[in-house]
Length: 155
Image (tube, rainbow, N blue to C red; front, side, top):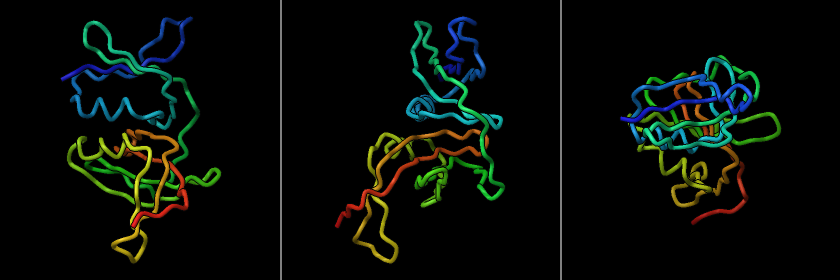
């Protein structure tokens, strides 16, 4: 088990800790470190950098990025949620949603620049989906993979 701290990227205030996790599994830590955005308590934070301190604690430095826009229809997961959402202006349409038991089940997707989404009604054609950004939404217990379709197909 590791320790994790989210700190504000505020040198003048000595990088104050805003969230601390005393025991976190390494698989979850790897998933969190891959996310460029962090949502907690209805606030959005943008990850700036991360560090492994000499004592083994991982620190993720963040800046406030605004309030989280909540939609009451968005699912709150009891397990580990993984959503793929298509960006279109200020909209982020849900393409696919999954629920997993372990963080390692989502690690490969979180570390992929492209995912392939099966074309509706087809078992052999997949549409290429390019990563824009990753988010961990702690309020919903969910990782969100934001991106756009490239127009390419995989047969």
